[in-house]
Image (cartoon, rainbow, N blue to C red; front, side):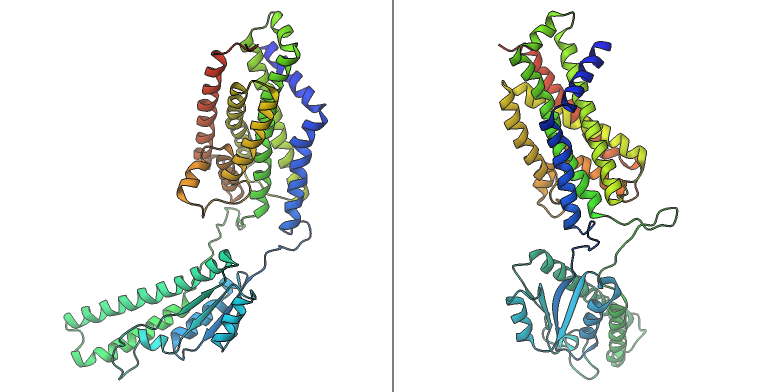
Length: 416
């Protein structure tokens, strides 16, 4: 055991004296995290995220048109959208074409009457539709506006269908006479309008911790671990590269002449790489906490998650080393894998809206499992809530690492 620790400690000492390794393991991710701090406004104090501008044209004189206006004016959407109420539909479309707004919402005349006929009026032949004119240059913002409008229309449709069912049931049960249908339906329409105006299109759910403080999501609590996980893949591949460097320089052969087996050398180097990865993650998390005041959540959960995510990543580092024949091959393949895993694993952008197959592919990376765990913790979760990420990372380390060990067993450690 002393030999394993000595080999691991020696590798850790060598890396701590290697300026190039320190740049890629600590300085580069640190500078990237600071850059993201400027982008998100954590450094300047400005969030950097502006409310979505949207043009609203209400040509309807009924209550549903007014309800949509009130929806965009609601406190729930105050920080999300910046509505501009105008009367000219052509001008609203022109604002979209000029990229001044993300979308234009146009409520045509007769919208309310087509859903809730006024007393004495016959049922409409068709429903007047709301027009959503989207800006293709702002697909995400336009998608948010579309979701708000669809949420509003969903509540209108639900109320309309419910009203029709209630009227039929009341008529069949004899609670109202046929000549009372119009009056009863008008009353139901009034209730529908009131319900739509009272209920917001979007509700923001903010979990409250036991201590009574609201648990809010900090974008930097996602980006900072995303960067740390991205560069962790460099660390684990660089650890395997050191094995091939020693083999090419002849120091590995001299080490094997001593009373040390190849398995002890391999395990010792894995210990060194593992300790380096754990220290890298711990330092980046600690510095991010001090610099940006990030709340990482349950400390025990953070520690266990770091240990697990490095274990999962080190399996891939071993596999790259087992497949490569020269240190340069490890460097090239390791850098490529680092970037691919960064993209697939969500280190750059969240994959919640990505296709299902891409989300499935992300589960092959330690980045995705690690980010899941850090997100759970930052939202108030504890170690008990990390079962799925920890299981995924442990299984990854065992399976991928097992494949790497099998490949090492088929080839002498000194090559050939």
